[in-house]
Image (tube, rainbow, N blue to C red):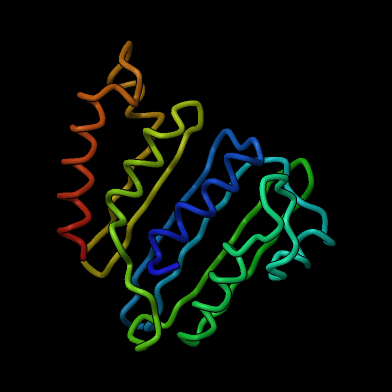
Length: 179
């Protein structure tokens, strides 16, 4: 995967496939610690210890549509190449927590990519799932909670074109200020 935004999208799709109803996505830049930390937590079906252990094997996948699963192995590779690591915890019936740490200033860290677009695409692409997404830097914190958005636009679905365009502008402007 060429950027962190792609990793966020891939892992979020895993959460949705795992029947999550609430997904937390956090991206935090910490200049003092020289880290970029991605955390994704869901309340999906979770995984047993054996499945978690096999996640880094690209030839292990639960999908029926293909015989390889490259998302997590590529994430691990990108983290390790930048001096970071990945930690995954999961409990069957409770959900999964993923923490991926990248070296912020490391030359091999993938770029962030279009985080604002990914946040909007996730929020509007899976209207049946609730998301709490945060982007944090030394300049502040931006949080998008789709439950609040749905309440604000009562009667309009979150994937209504007017809602999508409004969200796109809000998210893009706020994240741009924090970068």
